[in-house]
Image (tube, each protein chain N blue to C red):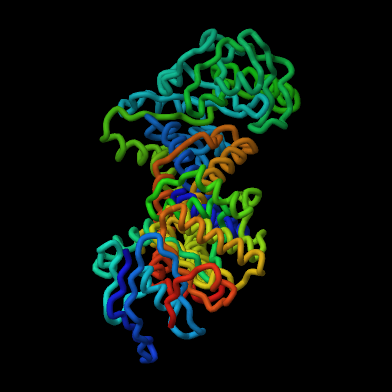
Length: 208
Length: 402
């Protein structure tokens, strides 16, 4: 499903990082592990189509991601890839449900209210649909960002350090949510983390 | 969820700034709207009232005052002219139609105009109820007078001396309302029309009292009227007739067209100053919208980066930011127009002069230009912040905290 071939990236200060080739099959769940500064986020950005690598190519369902036009790339990313960032980055002027609606609207997808209701229920956010981000706790914000990544039923779910700001209970809940939802939606999952609590939940790991 | 809703939500996230920006635009548009509405209505009224009147002949004095008092009925007459001299002028072959006016009395602030039937033809007056005056002390009243003074056909009223409603009443003789005019949309809506004999009768009453103390005089020789409204027989008269009146008689001739133009040039300075003031406010509003959008971009870049991640194209985000500026200025422009109409309506309600009453239920084409100006200000103010959306580095932005 996803093939990374001879990827390398040069940072503005000149440092070059080379990534081992990586094949991710449908519905596979991976950990992307490495210490801080090892290039985990850079590789996730490259896979997401957010950062063009200096060399190499990324194929997604046999589509050369960086061969697409900017507009097609934006649409492809919106429809095929769900991203959970290290920080929730919700839009503050919108409510929880509107933050989810906007994910469908920006990618040109239909907003499936029934499905979203189930996801919010799973994440314990049903009561918070009309709340604004400023009214939520850090854990709740993170859960909303997970729900947002799942809105368009992506083929690939990417999470960058999704548990770094969560306590143990919430960590388990979010991991289960990510793995279950990825499985239920037939999506592959990549979690980039240095959080050792995550190791027991996913067996495959790509180490940097 | 469409970008209009997102823009709207973004704008009102910071309510105070949004409201201030909207108010700035609204004030600029409002002032210009008031100026356009007022000058257009006044201009139209002046034109309608002076329609078909080529010249006014009256006592020497200010020609503008003569025009204002005899056509628009908003100033005091310059004095009286001998009826005998007026009669001679009215029969001049250069004159197609001459309408004599005798002013000096009012009822509840509405001027009583002594005239003859040529006045009916000049203004094309039509009756709503009753008939035109035919005898002394019969009056035909304008539609507004009937409504505001609550007068019906057959009602009686006493005229008062002077042209404002605080003069002494002529208690001896009462006028009878003989008819009510249809709405004419000109000054006649606010006039009480009667024959000149009625005016003489009212004032004869006063003269009688005075004559007991003075030497007896020849009454016929002393008859006077206030002015004559003249329509020329041919364009040739424009050159000859006024000069003839001004040089060979003790009266003055004033052209409504020239005096109206002079009046507009006099008040034009004030109007121009206000216009520039309003334009300045609109320029400040453009700057204010630009500054607030530009400043908000610092915080908004996270939202924009997230939206890019979610599949929004750069162009879509460009329009999103543009729309915010446009929404502020468009809402401001609409509120400004509303303010303009409301202000004109309120001014109209409190206007002392009933002759040139302004109304807020009046629209001019310039208002469309004001809306267009609002749109242009929105575009100008938001184009630079909108272009910044193209420079947002998604990966870099989202790796940082707000």
